[in-house]
Image 1 (cartoon, rainbow, N blue to C red):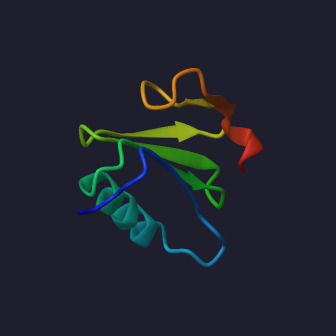
Image 2 (cartoon, one colour; image 1 turned 135 degrees about the vertical axis):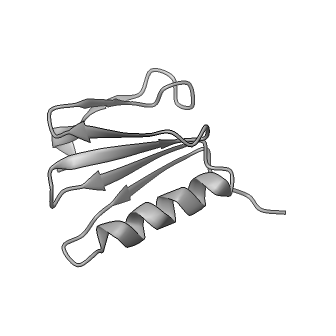
Length: 81
């Protein structure tokens, strides 16, 4: 039995490949993660992955939301960049 968290945050370091991290996020979702934030500090953006397979790209000025997975949790993206 696979156990997956409901919510994950992955932060790209200087040496991380964005393509590899995107693949990792898709694997998380396929294994049961409901919401994932991929924080790309190198390009000042974030990608939000959802259980329905949708992916949304946000600029540095965005406020990320925990949506229905972590209700009430919001974070100004610049705090993580």
